[in-house]
Length: 488
Image (cartoon, rainbow, N blue to C red):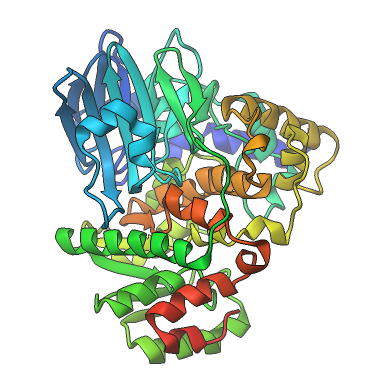
């Protein structure tokens, strides 16, 4: 074996040597659910965490959660029990928000109108079902073996609670040179670094304790839409997020770049007169973005931190906490370290991410044309240059993903695989990882996060949607001056 893969494997196995389990940012906003009859023994990291975490019961489950995790328990007239974990916001200003009884009766239908970053657990008639937000921003991971059922917000949390070892296939992947050359480093499919621990993929629910997944979206075929229908849904998402932030007294922070995704969001905050701040990272900033950023700052007059240097941090400290939160398949988090240096650990700041913008404007169509609905096509999209043993590892991972994410029969619904794969895999794994990595510093939220908005976007004609012009038109509705500034 070459020294490089051998060194990387050793470093992954030594991961706990650099991790401070007493850091309150570790698995911040997280939770662990397990049978009340079978509490986890856990390693030293888990035992340190468990001393400060809170506990509640829901049906057959015990739920342990971080002191800052939002948790609401409800009981309906028919005896159903519901736990809402995290930030659940209903983006339906023209309708009354669904009642808790609606979640118990038909959670998939009720959650179609939801945004935020949340998990919902429904206990009804002895059955337990687990859902999360459309984007998958509140990541959920689960043990695949029904003989030892448990699920949690972070893969590493499950691993520490149950002493789950690192898995061989992911170790081989992250130790390979091919992986280190990838611009976007995420694991293929729903794999995690740990044996028999998988990510719950967006639009799928988890059935406990069988630990089977079941797809609940799309419930109907793709339908044609127009820009007005799309804008109504986007505007509803923004209005809901603005109202929620005002109610909580939060201080919004946006990334300021030469791109369009975040601009399409903060233009609504500007229009609503909601103060916000900006931050610009040094990487992956391009030189051509600098004059665009300057123009945006002149237009908005917002407080702004320019050119935050994101450099590779050393192991240990807050960077390793970010890495643990992100699933341990990458190096210590540059994002966590840089943002912590600026903002420390905040409970009133919220980073409002533009990640969902690429879902609605069909980003993958720029680089892929996934016409074949197969695991092999997914592996090719994940890394088109992969070959040999590495390609075999990827295809094996996506074969499992194909089954657990329930892609069979999905083609007949009329949605493009490019769209679903980018949404459910790229955003539901890598995107959620980015949010988890930032949690030790502040809560973060992808604002363009809702099935109704995604459906409206997917129904647009390709010539209208598959361009940055789509979101520039959104900006135009809120601020013509911002819309007139070029897009990189």
